[in-house]
Image (cartoon, rainbow, N blue to C red; front, top):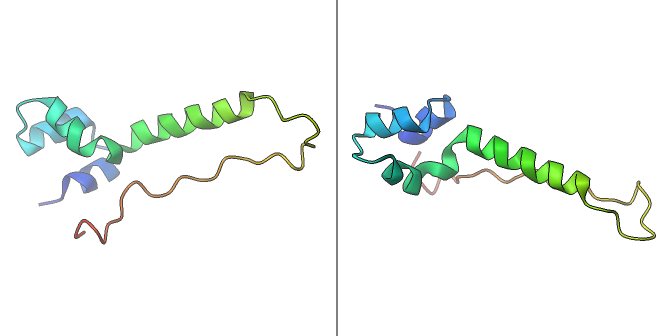
Length: 83
């Protein structure tokens, strides 16, 4: 049987994974697995990048010196979780 993280990686919505896991409340699933929901992470990334683009540049900083936001680190260290 696949793990919940594999279901999220496959794009299965949180609500369906919650049912597959037999959780009586979706809040249980959110509490433990929300950080692995790719669609939520993608939305947060997009919001963060948009915010960075809207911030005013520091005085005296040329466009070529302005830093882009770094790419996010993986949400999960699979070695730590036994995957």
